[in-house]
Length: 71
Image (tube, rainbow, N blue to C red; front, side, top):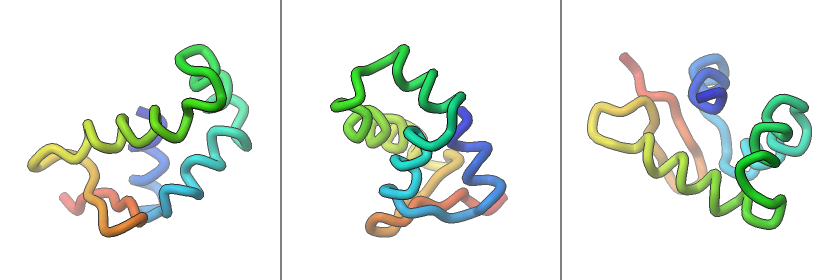
C-alpha cells in the first residue's frame, strides 16, 4: 500500500522510477526483501500494480506511466 500512498502524493510515476524506489527507500526495500528476492522485484511490483488496476481501483496505467486515479 505504500505504492498507492506515494502515487497519491506525486499523482504519476514511471514503472522504472517506482522500481528504483524499492532500492532507494529503506522501508520499501525492507518490505520487498521480506516478500521476494531482489531479482523478482520487477515482476512482483508489476503484479501489485496489476491488482490495483481493477475498475474503479486506485491506479490506472498508460504505457509505462502509472497514475493515481482521480476521485
